[in-house]
Structure formats: structure tokens, C-alpha cells
Length: 265
Image (cartoon, rainbow, N blue to C red; front, side):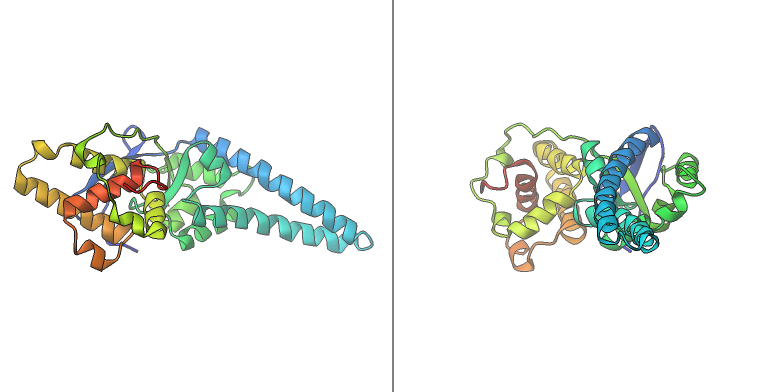
């Protein structure tokens, strides 16, 4: 677990995260209706996969119907669990249903979802479905100030709405001809996937208000924000980071978030 301290306030269905570096950003929580629709979409996908596999098993094991039923039952659970755990763990905290409805699972401290958290929250789904129709999970969401189902509480996760973020206007920091972060495409891709739109907005705002900030205030804000990105989001090589200023770090980070990754800026 990280040492990020969070301020949680379920006001207007939002949670406010405060990092040790003094960076604040708001995350809109996903409500029960949008989560239900995403779950129904995912259920359709899982059931379609299970039915296809079940038909294949019934054909192959037509002479032993009892055994085929057991195999299909176990497979149904395995596919349902693997679908959620693997997609959320390796696909930016999203399943197909969540992505279509702009939802995302994150750590409750505002950090990207860890693989082990994805496994835990999906394993706990066996309790959320009890006694039928996700009654335990639904009651847990309704009674939680952070709208967490039982699995979210155990795993320490939140489901938030992925807010579309408009690209900034063409500022001086968007006209950089070279971005050294693009020399590390794997890290850059991880950075882009891990950063939430709210965090990207914080970076955009910090750079956009450069001329409004006193020099010492600007240095402190940029230092704290760059340190948070480097330690908590996606670390670039130390030998690279030591050669650039905190402001240049944020400019490079903004280039990753707001420019075409195939275009070196």
C-alpha cells in the first residue's frame, strides 16, 4: 500500500484526493445506474462466451452429461472471474462494459489499480451476488459514502467516471520540438494509461498558469507535482530526470497526455 493520504468527501458524488505533495484533484464517483448498465453489458459478453464453450463441451462429452454439467459450471465461474480480473488488471481498470460507459476502477487513494486489487475485487464478487441479483453488492454500494460494493471495500478500490478531457489551447509549452520522454515508449504508454483526466487537468492548469505564479511558488508546485508523477504514476529513468527541470518534466508529461504518441514533439 502507498502512503498517499486521501481526503474523502462524498459530496455531489465526488471524492477529493490529496497527495503528500499537496496536489488536489477530484474524481467523480460512478453511481449505481451506470455501474449496473456496465455490469449488464459485461454479463452478456460473459454469457455468450460461456454458452459457446458449453455447447462445445456438451458435444465433446455427450456420453457423460453429468460430467459435462460440472465442467460447464466450473468454467462459467472461471470465465466470469478471469474476464473481470484480467481486463481490469491489464486494461486500465476497465472491462468492455466499463470502457463503453466511461467508467474505471482505481485504487481508493487515487492511484492506478494494481493487479492484485483487480483479482481481489473480482473474487469477492461471489459474496456481492448473494443471496440473488447482487443484493449484497447493491446494498453495500447504497450504504457506502464512496459507493463501494463489498469487493471494493475489501480490495480498497473505487469505481469512478472517466471524464473526457479537452486538449489545451496551443500554449508555449505545447510547442516543444522534442520530448525526451518519447524515447521510452513503454514507460510513456504506461504513464498515459495511469494518469486520470483529473490529474492531466492539474498538469495542464499548473503549466497554463505559469505567468500568474510567483517564481518561488511555481518552483515548489512544479517540484511537488513532478515528484508525485515520478514516484506514484510512472517513473522515467533517473539519469533522464536528473538532466531536466521540474517544469520540463511537466511539459514532457503534458506532451504525452495531449499529443499523438506517434508524433515526437
